[in-house]
Image 1 (cartoon, rainbow, N blue to C red):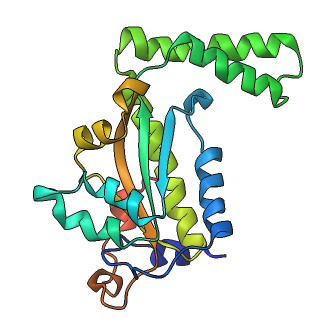
Image 2 (cartoon, one colour; image 1 turned 180 degrees about the horizontal axis):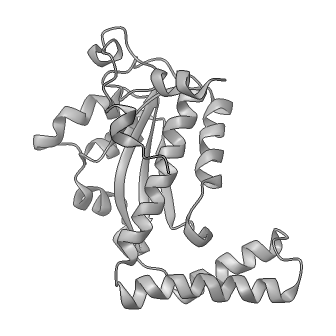
Length: 217
């Protein structure tokens, strides 16, 4: 596998083959990537709503109406669609839940390691809860780490994808009752296989030159 080839293969897909579906075992790899994604202090402040059914995609499509309707076919014709959601806060009981899961998974070789993890994570969370007061924004950064993993991983698997911030967050929050669950929609990602008629598939990539992007010291 050559990562440069993968990076050149992937692009923001504008048109999917409607009837070509991602195999279940292949999509399970995508779900594994989401679950295993990195996040700051392993906070995992996300939730994912996934659909490969017409009924589910119609519900997602409610968030791409009106001036956002240019994204509708990318939702309806995709094989799978994922709504990336973010936790709007991090409460103490959630920190306890994380710690218990890590303990059960064998992360702590000694009791003091457990205490150190809890203390360190709580300190970082409190910076965002109390000092910066930007917990949701901080959490959204972790969601974008996850989304990046999905886009690259999809490319490795030969799957096409398009991330979409062009969604009506309020509509999708209401559609899926997210606010009451302490969550908010962030973005949609549609996955599938590019159609021959997708104009964007044949266009060359355009990126700034390395000299503009890198400083070696």
